[in-house]
Image (tube, rainbow, N blue to C red):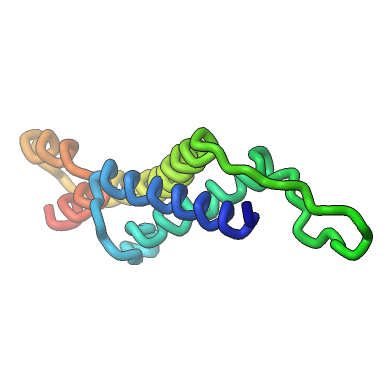
Length: 147
C-alpha cells in the first residue's frame, strides 16, 4: 500500500478521535478563542492535535516506523511493502482522543486557576458556589466573573 494513503488514513482516524474528544468535553463544538489571555482550543484544534498525535505515534512506533520514504529505487533495492491493520487505525483513533484530551485539559486547568483568582476577590454566597461547580471550566469562569 502507498505510505501516503496509510498516513492519510491514520491522520483521519486521529482527527476523528479529536472530534470524539470535542463531543466528550463540556465545551462542545466551540471555535478556538482566547478567554482572559487563555487559549481555549475548540473543536478545530482538537481535530488537528488528534490527527498530528496519531500520525506521530504511528510513524514513530507503528508500522509507519519502518517506511523509508526517500529510498532510491534505482539502487536495485525495492522499498518495503507497508500494511495498515485495523488495530493500527484503532490505535490512531485512541491516540487522537488522548492527544486532544490532553490539550483540552491544559486549557481547562488554566481556566479553573483563573476562576479561583477571580473568585478569591469576591464574596460569593454558598448556594451560588454549589451551582458554579457543576459547570464546565469555561462556564465556571464566566459565572464567577458575573457574580
